[in-house]
Amino acid sequence: MSELTPDYLRQNRIAWDAEASNYAAAGERNWASEPAWGIWGIPETELNLLPDVAGKDVLEDGCGTAYVSAWLARRGAHPVGLDNSPAQLATARRLQGEHKLRFPLINGFAEQLPFRDESFDFVISEYGAAIWSDPYRWIPEAARVLRPGGELLFFGNSTLLMLCTPDGPEVPAEPALVRDFFGMHRFEWPDDEPPAVEFHLGHGDLIRLLRTNGLEILDLIEVRAPHDAETSYDFVTADWGHRWPSEEAWRTRKRN
Image (cartoon, rainbow, N blue to C red):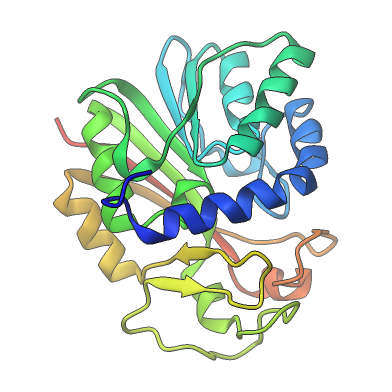
């Protein structure tokens, strides 16, 4: 990384390299499974997020252990996985060998994609760039590398969840607003060790950003947790996630 790259990228790389071993088991399960999304593991058969990807060039933007790329490769896509964390990519390469499924894995970051304009038919981020990169930097880059008519899908924490999540470790979302809506953008968690930086926008700001970059909105899916849902994450309970959307998926398309 050079001095010109955003300050949080180094911080997030350190955090995710430190966390990589904690995500290896989840990566192993997801590589061996059918697509199931987010912290609640909602099946693709229920959410229907993926377009037909057979024969398409796909970028997984912030791929982590690259299980989404593995799902897409099995559906006939030609995926490329990109991630800021070398340790996460090491897990991905190990799983490629175990599953005998190869595709390019690149150590880089979503804010400065190392690809030519209009290189991909589909860009996807389940968490990854969707929350760990500044949307004012990564969304223009995703739009740049998309071909006209190509789709960008990103999936992460909902705006409402972020407004109801207090500061402090292991404190789940409350049934009340605890943060300001106006001005939401950069979220830091100083109690985490090592600390990391997330990014979340309000819907109006996000819609304007997408439109400015030539992306039309196809759908916004607000994810509801099943009553019997389970998750290893401590920032939200199943009861909260059943009453209010804890996650959301945005489907967009680059205008011709």
